[in-house]
Structure formats: structure tokens, C-alpha cells
Amino acid sequence: MRTEMAERVSAEPDHRSRRMWRALEPVHTITYFAPEPQAACEALGTTGYWMSYFALRASPLGAAPPEIVAALFYNFHPGLVAKVVPAVWELAPPERFQAIRLETVDAALRRLVGAELLGSPGLAEAASIAREAAVAAPTAGRALAAANAALEWPEEPHLVLWQAQTVLREHRGDGHVAALLTAGLDPAEALVLFAADHEIESEWLRKRRGWSEQEWAEAVGRLTERGLFDADGLTATGRAVRDEVEAHTDELADAPVAAIGDAAERLVELAAPLVTAIIDAEGFLRANPMALRPLVSSG
Image (cartoon, rainbow, N blue to C red; front, side, top):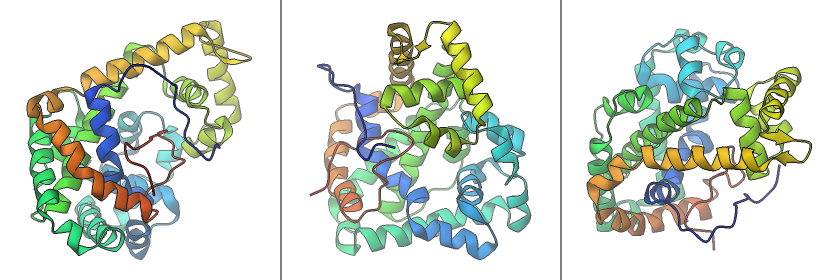
């Protein structure tokens, strides 16, 4: 996989919902990138990265069966999900994993960022704005966003900011799935196009999402038949489909940003020191499956 995340050069600025996602997402991803959550899950008996990942992310859904988790997460192979769900709920109830999320995110942020920044007025203001946006996010038809929005809010501002971004990113993700469905892309096909578009090593992504070589090849075949893919990768038609998916995702994610108006840019500004600190302390996986390039950069 490339060591730097690829991004298509464009004269157009980011859609405001994409800009806010890029500005805030590193606050959420420490749930999966920091060692504290993984270690806490392993203390309960989980084995391997995926068991903790699915337990932490799916816990707001309750003790959901693998079919529901695979359907909502979309691009993971159902067999990969079934290896760990529902076995993980036999180790501890979902409520325990919900508690672990908050406990370990708190610990990770205190280690990565420090008490001074976490206790700053700017962070408190950012948390307040982010919570307002999250509360305004519509959840009809968005199961992961709704499940996270139903959780009680923590008290400390840095955890409020984390929970708000958790709601907002799952709201965006639910909309992204809707955009993929609208484009007629099944999970494997969506991954093939995404990998080609962002120059992510396809073998790395295939294995990470649990698809077999044959299933991946079959997805490539279906995309080739539709004129979206060829021996050189994305065709012009395939790139247009990818662009439409991302534009549709941005539009579907816009409601909570529109709800806070000009405060969205204030939130981006206030979050920058925290995100910079996370990145500088290596709390963010630079080469990641989301091809996420944060607004702020290290050093």
C-alpha cells in the first residue's frame, strides 16, 4: 500500500460536509487506531484486531447477529463478520463494550494530547458545536447513526466531541451505503473501484475486508462488463460513477452541517489543535482504508 494517501487534484474545494469529516474524523478513529481500546477488549478475551473492532463499532446496535452487522457495515465480507459475531457478545454484553469505548478513548486522548488542551475553552466550544450538529443529524433510514445517537452523552468535553463525531461519521457512512446502492455497486465492486480510485493496493484492501481472490476477480469481471473497469483500472465511466458516489455521499451528509451554519468553520478551526496533536503523537493511521487525508498535517 502507498505510504502517502492519494488524492485526485481538483480545482474545486471540498464540499462542506467532507471538509468537516476530514477535520474531525481523527478524533473518532483513535477508537480503532489507538492501543488502549484493543488492550481493554483483549482483557475481556477478544483475539485479533477484528474481534475488538466489530465489538466496539457494533455495540450500540445491541447484541446484533452477524447478518445485520455485515449488512450495515457493507464492505466487509459476511464470513469475516461471522468469525467474530456473535461470539464476541458471549465474552461481554454490548453495554460493556460501549463503556470500554468511552474509557479507552478518554485514556488515549489524555496520553496523546494532554490535560491542558483537553481542558481548554476552545475544546469545550468545539464539543458544544459538534454536539449541536450531531443532534441535528437525521437518522431515518440510518441505523448506525441512530444507534449511536440514542446513547447517553458523556460529560467531559473531549468525550462529547468524540461521541458527536461518532454520530456524524456513522451518519455519513449510512449515507455512503445509500449512495453505493443507488449506483448499483455491491460491497466487493465498491471496494475494487475505491482501491483503484485512491491508488490503494488492491490485495491489501481485499485481504483486510475478507474477500477471496475469486470473489475479487468476479467483482472485477462484473465491473468490466459494465464498462467501469479495464486492464488499466478505472475507465472514464468508472471514474464518473466514483465521483457521483462521493458527491451523493457529501450531499446526504450535509444536513447536520447546514444546521450549524457558520459555526461549522468555527468547529473546524477549534478542532485543529486537537487533531494536530493526535497526528503528531502518531494516534492516526496515515495510510488507512478510508483514504482519509485530514485537513491538518503533522509538523
